[in-house]
Amino acid sequence: MAKAFWKGAISFGMVVIPVKMYVATEPRTLNFHLLHKKCLTRPKQVLHCEQDNEYFSIKETVRGYEYAKDQYIVLDENDFKKVPIKTSHSINILGFVEAQRIDSIYYQNSHYVEPEELGAKPFALLKEVLIKTNRVGVAKVAFQRREHLCALRPLDSIMVLHTLFYHDEILDHEEIKPPKVKTADAELEMATSLVKTMSIPFKPADYKDDYQAALKELVEAKLKGIEPKIVEEPKIEIPDLMAALKASIEAQSKRTTERETVKV
Image (cartoon, rainbow, N blue to C red; front, side):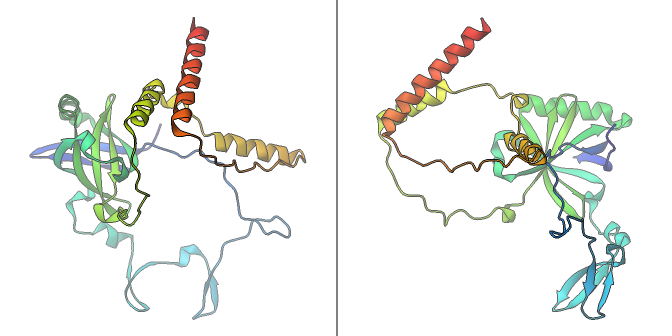
């Protein structure tokens, strides 16, 4: 069973709900190690101090904040625990907003939240209210040496806490200037038809990382001494827009018909 990495309470108004938080996601990627090119040996990571001309390990390091040029103040783990902020042990809900009001660009990481036994009833009540009102709780909570802005939402029998980027962490896009164009009504109508034809229910389990699968095949081929072929970059050709839309609709309609025939 997964181990909770944070324990505290959800608080809103005068209500306090003791909860535990778990990591909700885990990237699935192939791991590659840095090797010495000459003998394919994994090197040992060492740190070097220019002032003392000494090599040392990561265990001999401390965390320092540079408050002036080459001037540092050192903080240890006990100092971090003393940061005077109430969100260290509390998911402090600041308010509730409609879920669609938070642009997806703000979402960062996800964590599962479950109640302690004493908090089961108020936890269930909060979850049901969020579902009924189609809202999420906007909150702040501190862990991993920073205070996170987050959104708390229901998920089946538990809730999910999504950490959010702060507004000043979102890079400005005003300087990105795409060419100005004008779309014709007929093009808009045809594109709308294509979107409707391609509309599908989202089933996450239907999708997989094809790059990782292909990368694994490449590794296996090299183990067998087979040199893989280089995939050529496709040439980009801009066809007649209306003709491309029409052909896309016809092709998609054909695929849909074939799928329905297979089901029967």
